[in-house]
Length: 162
Image (tube, rainbow, N blue to C red; front, side):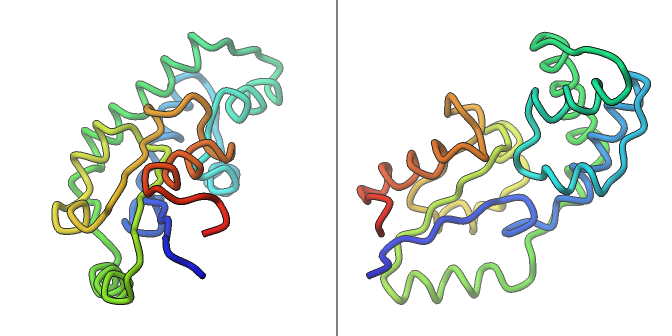
């Protein structure tokens, strides 16, 4: 029997993916790379060192963890300054969360976004409906690793079978 529902934030709860993609494109352009939105959407929610390294390798350049961290911090800065005020929840989200809660479901949010971003873009009325929240900076291995999802289930007192 299903007792828990896990949600992603970007592109599921919030209509934010176009803005994350633009911020990634701008951060990478500053490093001399033009990256298609399609490529970034293929990796949405799981952009990590390996993803960016593949972009660099395709352009005959190498990237290390420090350089990736710098690009990630720049992407977050661009997102915060230029786009975060534009982020809105999808229209039916509150209704869906309410119905799931009425059905007795536990709700968790699992996002690759850092807690700092989540706290700025996720409306209180949505955040308050979540029983547990996992952010990308709180787990050792981010999505697509199962770690964030297993952490959320553990936080809900559930196992993967629920």
